[in-house]
Image (cartoon, rainbow, N blue to C red):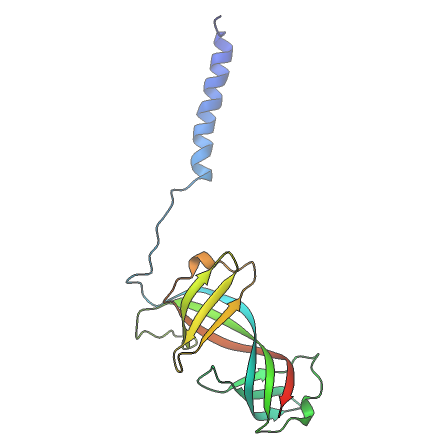
Length: 180
């Protein structure tokens, strides 16, 4: 059985239009390597919630609702705004030890050894990334302590690699408990 010429022309025109449409939807895969790269932002605005078990209150400003904390993991003390849901912080005094629940924002940079970023200086390095469980494990540069964070679903973990530099920005204190 022979195909009529009009059916052949229709199939040919469909194939031709499909061949023009496909390249607009598809791009060749690219291999990107961090090796030899300049210091550059990989991803930022990664919110992490973590607990500082033995944080030292250095200063407190009840009117501004801020608290300066020194934590065992960080090289310097950080100023944290106190979340509106937190009560009882007026009773804290400098020198008190607390267990604090904190929210920080992480920025991850591709970095060669010795290169610092022009934004926030990196405090840690990425040790491992587990995309299946959404885990990011880092090692702090000052004390060698390791911390694992569970990150949100929107974080593109496939962009983050072991050895990348991590910078922290304190966002808020969401809860605390006084330690004796």
